[in-house]
Amino acid sequence: MNQYRIVINCMDGAGVPIKPIWYGKAKDHAKAINEAINSSKGCGWRDVAIEQVQVKMDNPEATA
Image (cartoon, rainbow, N blue to C red):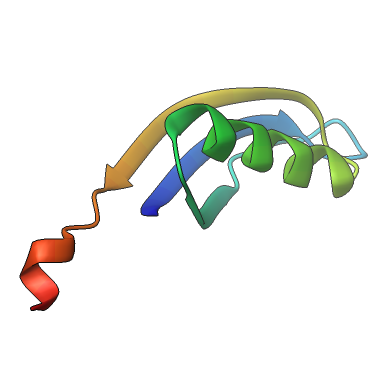
């Protein structure tokens, strides 16, 4: 699984723009983005948009 850092643009409950960062592991890009969006909406934030996605690829050969 790869490690992801996703920067999100959204609004909090009062309508103030915020930029939370989601950190997590996922098998692919789409699953990481979906997890970040679901996590943001679960916090009650709205108008969720992905600004940036960074990935650190796992290298199983390097852990030998």
